[in-house]
Image (cartoon, rainbow, N blue to C red):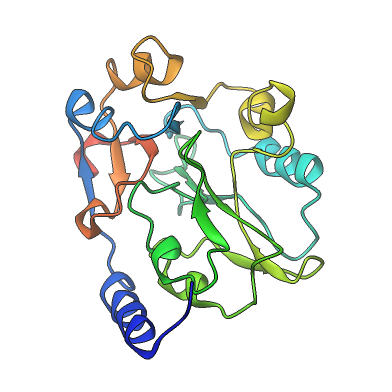
Length: 227
């Protein structure tokens, strides 16, 4: 795949459009969970903001299982400013990680094919051997979750533990280690999967859906009034 001047300009345009936009929207789960069924599976995740306690067990597990170097992270849990007054102070926690978009901008702008969507799982991943470190995917990602791995010298991000836990028949490390079961992982193409059971019974939203990225990371809102 060559990186022609026309392709570069198109990619640059995509960056201008996608950065700096922060829209969220509630979703109709039955219409969105099955809107794309390419491949044998289509893995997604639900993050329940009402269950997360900010313990960061998920980030520690991710780093250990996937050998993520210090100074970079595939997954972050951010804490809001305190809500309410002592002793009734509360915090809200949010997950920042790859959204595994069905319509992933990072894949479209990559000039070498290093950024790609795995047809068998729907997971957006990176081929380290093809990555040339151009940074186009980092700039194009509207969620700003990609980074350069200082050891592999390649773009890196969450891949749902595809090469580690999933390859061993396990759940992603973050899901396994969450003490409050705030994370649910599964196949969106399977109507009987755990993730679809959550989507069919909870109010959920996805970040920046107005960009048309079709993210597969769903979130149960902490406060429905904010959506």
